[in-house]
Image (cartoon, rainbow, N blue to C red; front, side):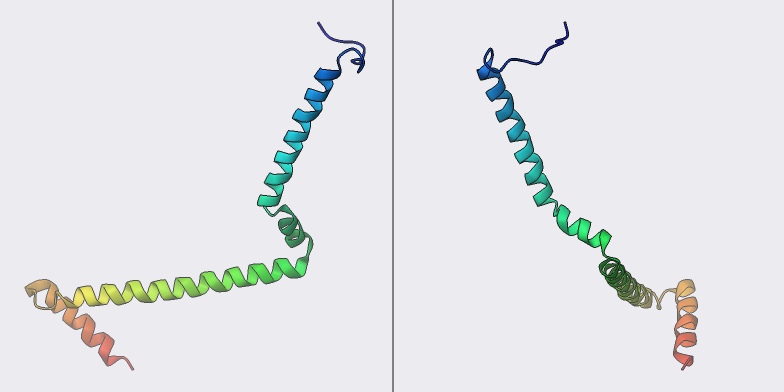
Length: 106
């Protein structure tokens, strides 16, 4: 059954106070979530083109540097690992040729 008239505060004062407390609790919870999510900082970042450009530039620089260092480390470890197999009969000849080719380049 749907109510057609608003609730009279004199008739049910406890229910209204309880409802107001519940809504205040929910609003406090939402405000706390927004503070923890640093919503203000996120909003400032997206409304300021200078901050967005600087942030994206720094992110790109970091990714590029990370990829370069990561590639260097992986290829270095792979080269070291392959150098352990130089003494093997068939694989060793191929690796030796590869090492000689690398050393011959200035």
